Image (cartoon, rainbow, N blue to C red):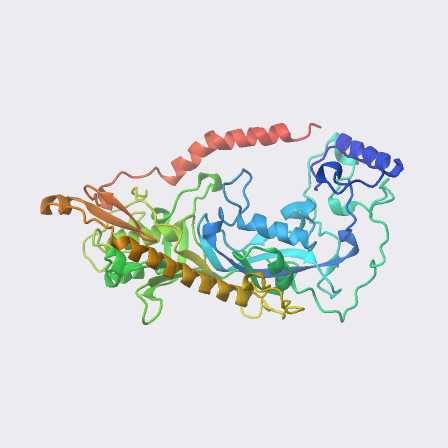
Length: 496
């Protein structure tokens, strides 16, 4: 719980409540029923009695099981990856769940949307430690407060959850009372096995791969030098010309304005859409595989940028657009650098034509790259082997074993689906032949993940309706939702 935004009157009322609770007579032991066992006002576990350290966690997750990575303010039909991971950290008492994300200074490297997976996502945060090394500090880190305009409340101190027990305040006797373990930890004691602890609590669709000690100033987001995405697709299934797709992908390399390869998020109020792509290669997943993968590496990415890029490459591979459509969409201003060898000048497209982005299922954040020597990834062996009675490998806390178990299970699902197709074949009825002229008038647009869109007539991108300019979109948001949000913030501020 954060007390920083509380008014003076609210804080005094809270202290009166705590004094009353401390003076109350002992209550009889409640039954084990949750209805007769209300939560006590103070938990027995005292986080201020333990040192903390800042670490980075590398983990993977199956995106199709979740409503995206980032936790949402509103209810979501599926859980979010961050929500599940935060709950596991709080349950293991590695972080104070009541202090929220701000209490542990939670930072993510890159955000993934609903259905999108990650093989090497990275977050950084402060966690409870078993050691007392020089980079570990006690209590909750408190940033320097910003200078606020003077008001009648300035004489009353601003409090945070970590201030109780350090300020001279009438805190109840049963809060922060000395514990037998409240002593300096043994510097030779091994650190908590963070991956093993968390993997026992997390579902099999989220696995902690490794952890690294980091400096207190480390940021998993801003320290990242590049991000590597993979998008898997089947050229034979969708009838794609991979060679033409590679020609189009080559135009992506370098620093470009990608406003026509993303979705404008007005809430972010972006005005700069330049991003640098370092690599854009299409290749077979393996020598004997019919599956291909786009390896896209860049320093940073815009909202839905990879899925928009893949949608354009699908159009090129299907023969619906020429590879030159990529430099055309990158040509957002007059006198821009000519990316093609053509002598004809490219049209200027400062707004994006309407087109559907590719499916999110085959997309994966494969890796987050950091400067050499900045991170020291560690994976300790589990503290104890699984018991003989534990026959289910999915219950193993070892991430490597768990992932190979998931791979074996997915192979079994593939074989079962193949058996379903074989059993249904004898009942399959061929559709009547479509007249040649009618068949040619229907266009199939691949969208990835074995999905597609059929259109009676394909309209080239340059002939389609354009979206509004991002400045118009931003201004419309500021005048509507942004204004309502600002009004709500002003109404919620305590009156001086």
